[in-house]
Length: 483
Ligand SMILES: Cc1cc2nc3c(=O)[nH]c(=O)nc-3n(C[C@H](O)[C@H](O)[C@H](O)COP(=O)(O)OP(=O)(O)OC[C@H]3O[C@@H](n4cnc5c(N)ncnc54)[C@H](O)[C@@H]3O)c2cc1C
Image (cartoon, rainbow, N blue to C red; front, side, top):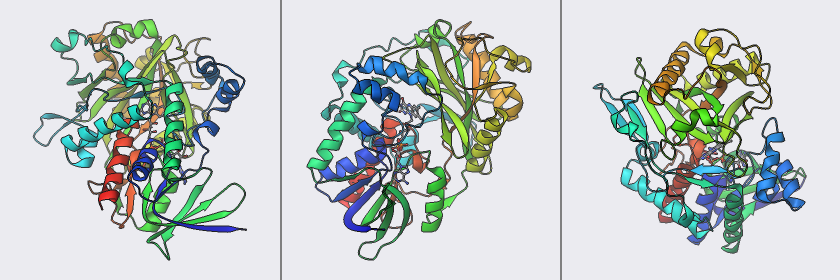
């Protein structure tokens, strides 16, 4: 077994938006940096069905149509990470807002931004989001073509169903744009001396001999590659949770059980039924505070999109996929509660595994009508919904009581604001699990208690999303470069 040894100032582990932007920024600042990614370069880690079609000369639009053939997505790895192999939606294109709410100790409802909270300053968070967009534009994203929508529903002014409605605008990034962006970044990163190591899976991180840290990587031929660096930036995303928690334990990274978890369902209906909501603004995020004091919100509205499932720590979980190039006749969105629990990671994993088991290894789906009446759904008529594989059943009995209450509360409020938006033939599907990481104790520059080890993006448990992930990547690059 051959062993290769190399040394850098910084090793970034994971080539999703957070790691990619961090590594790029370090290379742009002339620093010595390697980007280690267990999947391939972006062109080698596309959905094989889509890639085959593109290779055969199909347009991106036609190739994207083939994606619906996949029952379960395994394309969340490779440079570009979980998001940039698909059509996606970039948040806060015209500026960062405080989209989330919570009840404070005095009982008042406060709006906040997770990025602001992570970085300790709204000014800094907004500045980094702006810098992300400048970077995206520099590497080819046609932001000048951002649709000018933002005709926000006048109903939002006089409504009382929701405590908070965030109407910040987003940018629809097609697969074609993502690929152009990531390819341009890969090329420039290498031109500037950055070392891109695809198909390198980080196995272990331990104390180094010549530098502070050693990253032991496996490559497919069975070779072991040993890299050493003074800084290691962990950017391994949400799906790597089992590996990350193990690595963090070995490194004695300070963490506590997370006192919160975000769990929920996805709601899917025919697009014309959701039209009043879709037309209400660019990307409505509607929140209320439950009777228990937890925040409940809609998120990730995919108009013309589809539901997709992927494997996560012994379960399947659901997400929404935008299909800008090949819209479906359905719309879906998440309904999620941020609940206070003893150990968010354990709660989230048990939630996902319980529902996956109830669905015999597939997501569990129920019509809204059956959910509200607490009776099982025997089958879903052909052509209804976009999930390819699922089990119809009584989802309601597998959800915690608080979530049943919150989903019912959300349906009622949506129908109050936009009558007829959620009808009894709409579908509810689960499990949805967000923000499931332990509470890693990070400083405002995302440094752990171990000197030189940082966490960015989804794996930090502090932020979710492409723009937020990239902003945390920039923050750490700045800290290292100014260090
Ligand atoms: C289907 C779907 C649709 C989404 N749509 C949107 C959207 O429209 N807009 C939005 O803002 N967000 C969206 N998200 C969320 C978004 O994808 C994530 O928030 C974002 O990708 C997080 O970026 P990241 O860099 O932190 O992690 P990731 O993008 O998950 O990247 C982590 C990378 O680390 C690599 N890795 C993991 N373990 C190792 C290891 N041991 N060694 C080496 N490499 C490793 C992985 O292969 C992966 O490439 C979506 C997510 C999904 C699943």
